[in-house]
Length: 276
Image (cartoon, rainbow, N blue to C red; front, side, top):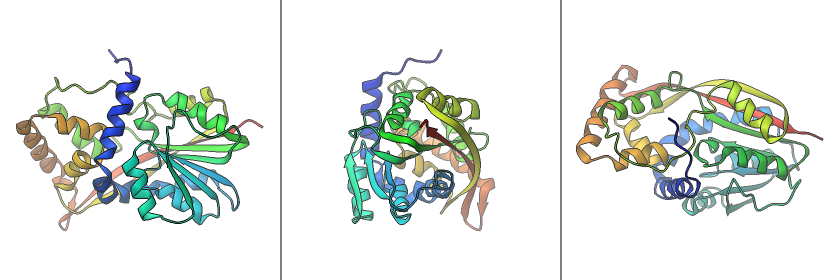
């Protein structure tokens, strides 16, 4: 039976997880998540002079591309450490600030475009965040977000989750949150946009390749560079962690090419327009 989300506990869990995951996320996940910026912005088509808000900005990758498009860019993240990293990487031209996706500190019709690259997976109340995005957009404004496709198409997730299921302690307790892959089907992603008040929602699946330096990098990417799956791994007893690490290393071997690793991955882009 699906657990009811513990909103405050889950939000604190995500915040604390990202506070300690900045460096590894930037180093190991960044080369993957940045591959979805072109598909996301390609659907939203931000134009010079438009006001763009990047929600759950992380290290600021999407915000920086918005600035390159000539937009007036603001960006928020719940993690102070992520905002510090984003400000370090992109020190000029972007209004970076700590902020909550589920309670945007901006007035109505403040933006033309709102983006969220893999952030909605980490929210306690994704429906509330989508409604907030709709409120903060001008009539005719556009909202777009990305999520991972189901593990069958996102092999990095499949390998790690399979290892945790086989060798992890199921008694490890984490705050209850929404299902991680709940928007990994077109129906549910479009449903989120429709329920939030967006018109003409669209969905597009993009196939990616995650290139990692070696066989241990996948475990390290999740262990050190994520809040949710990493929280599970970090809570495991040490002997379980080693069994999981070995299982991941063995499973990933088939994807090794000349010493490095290339994993098939996939992600959805969902976009919708605010009704004029």
